[in-house]
Image 1 (cartoon, rainbow, N blue to C red):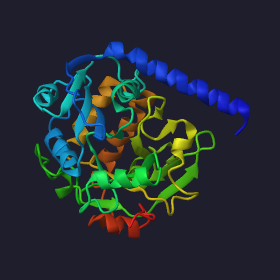
Image 2 (cartoon, rainbow, N blue to C red):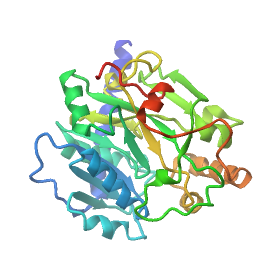
Image 3 (spheres, helix red, strand yellow):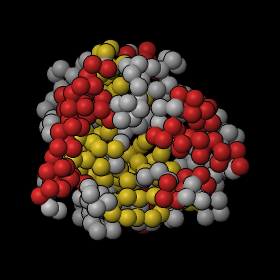
Image 4 (tube, rainbow, N blue to C red):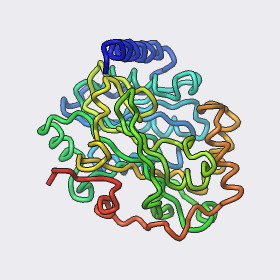
Length: 336
């Protein structure tokens, strides 16, 4: 990469950091409980809107994994999410009525909180429907992973977003508050993934799975990206560019080998396709706060009308992380 490209990326990062700093005016603190956190505390960062039905299991899952504290931004919820989170002693909470779209889909807010609170900590940035899976996660807490990453001087840990879905129409089984979503969404696509490399930022770009197969079959290059870097040993000079798909400085994106092979990596089980999804898609289309006037949600709405059952005869039933490694969707690398 030439000097001019490096210069442009440095200025791009400074602009992102400035946007984050400026976005602090969008946020009103509801509960800031960050004081007294240990120097080695592991943090989670999340933005949300109207996710109360998901929050009890989400918090329980990550508490059991070993997350010590949650930093959450509520973007105008009307379903009781704000009140529920305010009552959680391990949650620091901000609210905002500002535009999700104008905040780069919440990333300006999270970059600000990561810079203010995350410096020097391992930080996991996830959505309320994303559940982090890593090697040995059934028997080792997330601190075992971050200790190994520290010992090997690795600053980032990548994870592929794996869309999970039920067998049969997604409206057929009712998801209830506090329920493990993977009691319903037990299936995934074991193949049908395309990988390319982003030459500007160095990260892999992964697409495919049921969202390409059903919703973007005619234009697969427009399908959502599945590559994410959710776990980072944060430094105040870092910034997410687009969701958690990639970061600056550019070197943080080199979390895979050339084609996603031997470096340790994980998976984010994505519990999007539950019976609640149709109403969520309708709401986001009305709000128009997502990329390209919520074009992705319009594709979901049209696709589900034609194909209410995401399952197909090549679908695989989820067992555990070892199954995902055998299928080549994640790797334990040289972590024994």
